[in-house]
Length: 502
Image 1 (cartoon, rainbow, N blue to C red):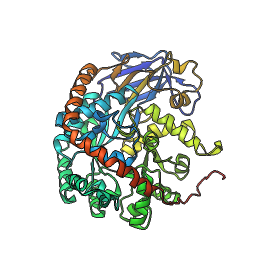
Image 2: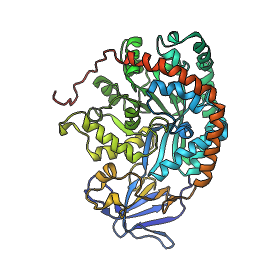
Image 3: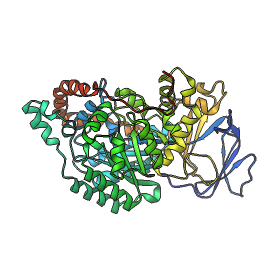
Image 4: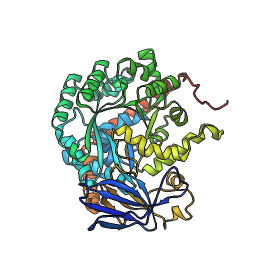
């Protein structure tokens, strides 16, 4: 990321968004070496302090993306009517044949969009086939560093292919298609753990707040011994563990049949839950699962955009919060949520909490959603000094232009950040007191160059992956009928926490 600004900087004349106040509070922010030292009216500053005029602007902490996939940046816009299971089947086509340079470029595309839309840190579950590599993860880390972001990057790993994870799916394929998907089988999990350990031992980015984690992708795609091995490595290195849990009803139904209990109950039995664990999506978790997560101090990454886009259902935000769970908000990847816009993700999160019942007593508030996208996500990433504009926190600051149409008129700051801001109001973005986006333009990224490189990569990868594209379209009608039949089976969630009246 951008190195923290040295010396003192004072931001004057702006309004600070706070959940405790309806309208932004007039205050200065004094920054020293990238850390906020004081917030308040008419702050004094040492001689030689750099002055920043924030007149006409609303300031909020950088939004934090609790769940995304940097490897999807080069794949945006390729899919329409697609379930999660079809998305998984498309992976060799959408993400195949990547060079190390492609991997960096893909991540940089995602980072550039996040920064321009007020996001300064992300939890990135990064995928490489057949194994995670040191070069690939260094490329992703370099992309975040060059863009000026903080990040947690986790190898997204499995030891069973999608076709092995869903009972009966492989047998439903014609012999010719079975032969082709056999090429997608993964290596023994011991090899994958060894590859991850090599990455962790050689990680060189922690000083720039680009940290590693581990992501056993989906419980059904991982042997229990493999998931426990991932958890052991995470504990040994003091890093996070992140998994897609209960994202689709297919996963929930198959998991209940396979384990005789919910996915979270099974993972709890394996000892995987804890303060460093994050469950992505969590759509098909019941109230007992929420209690388990809360009891262990674990987090959930709510990805409302992809949950709708893939037809997976609606995360019960109100019930999760009332159970005491920490909830962050994420965009998910560019191939299943289309953009990396955290303002949109917040708005979706608010709307989805409301559409589940006509009784507003059971809706999440805009302040709760705002906190989830800042402090809640920061906790999921493992950062204790992000997500708030207060002394001791890092100076990751977004400047919104109150002259843009989203703020005419300006009534309620945090409510309008959630419900009316869409990224068009972002004037400046700081990380560590340095401008990484200023006057509506990137300071660290040459966007025109990025566009040229992305278009060249797109054309080349389209040709290289033609075989996998053709395979996908042969598989599509089979998966599109087989998996929804599983999802049509009854699956009852235990619900009793703050449920709305029938």
